[in-house]
Length: 102
Image (tube, rainbow, N blue to C red; front, side, top):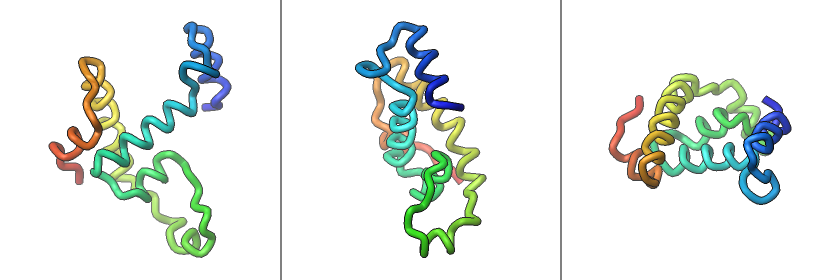
């Protein structure tokens, strides 16, 4: 989804996408929480976020790695994490250490 679409929706809801929150802010929050949970390898999180490898030598070796099982497991974890934060903020690493993810 285009970041402008997300930002437009946020503005319609009354948020100032320059001061409050923007689409990229949600991506950054997700990436940070997934990394801090300690449940997944950095490469799996980077693939989930669709980040491109900048090191061309490394890219030659890892470009086929999709990490699909880990990425599928991230989605319900992220949903559960957001639900938990609705009640009160919980650092991702405290939730991560209490769950086993294959």
